[in-house]
Image (cartoon, rainbow, N blue to C red; front, side, top):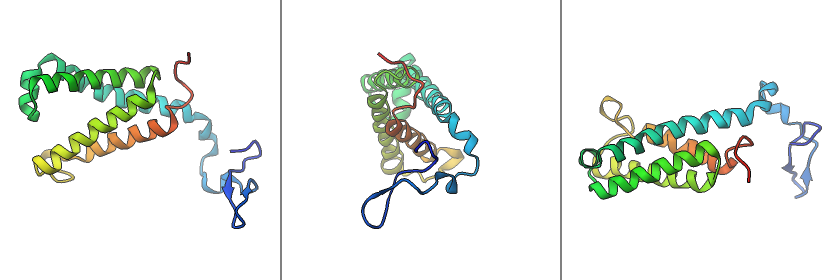
Length: 154
């Protein structure tokens, strides 16, 4: 976005055109100044979900491993990855690798639900993979935006 309110968009001639106002697609332009805060809230929500899952993986790796079909060692490794990824999202330290790692974990969860457990999108009693897909999409936004401006800087 430019200072005059235009966005960078390629013109038909192949040159950049900064004259097209961004406000054509924005209903509430006042909310644009809250983007970093909104990304922080999204990061915290994703971190809470993955952090809690990682905590329970580490608290009882044998029982949790049985419920998801993994060994206790794999469950512990998954728990460590989820907790570290959550810490990365909260602090903003190595946020893109953290988001990418959580995306890979989400892809593994979706693969398990679709191929191994034959669970549909909604599943029975809301146990489908729609929730995993939503978290994967949230991590994709975090990955592509580097978490916004409210991160720890070194």
